[in-house]
Length: 208
Image (cartoon, rainbow, N blue to C red; front, side):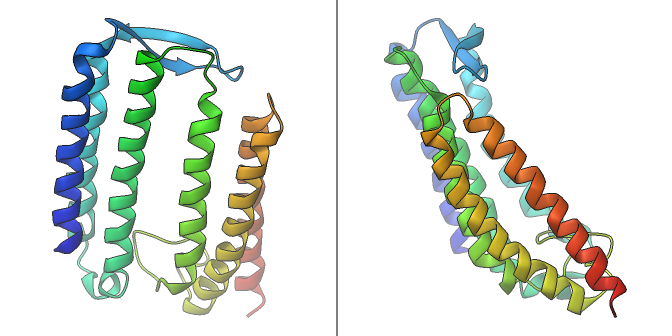
């Protein structure tokens, strides 16, 4: 209930943020940057309202998802982690909204990577802190074809994932020092972690 109240407040903030700054935003806004941090897509500033609308959509969908399954007893233990995850997603969307608003009002040489990658780093570290606390369920955690079948494999995979996500968080932050290669480092590191965890889960399951 506390998280739901917080989420509603955050959604209201996302709308108020855009309404307050709307008169100062140019009619045409940059909405996408290429890997060189150069704007390559412009649209009407009305498109910025898709972000607060997306916060509402995310809130509704993610709150309803656990109720679609009959295995709610599995969800109970992880409910507060799931609620925190929903709140974090909404906060991230508001952060992106703020970055887009400010970048278009105070348009200057702008590195989207410098703003987005630290946010990804925080999210990854938070994930690393919580992965090893989550019991096997249908919604959150590292769900491979093998971890979802066995509690031991689930625990081992998520413990390993917790460590790797923290490492990935640090790599993501350090990538900011490699101008022009930030997204290559981030995406390749993320793919590597995903592959390692899939292989770890597979071999752990077949070692039983």
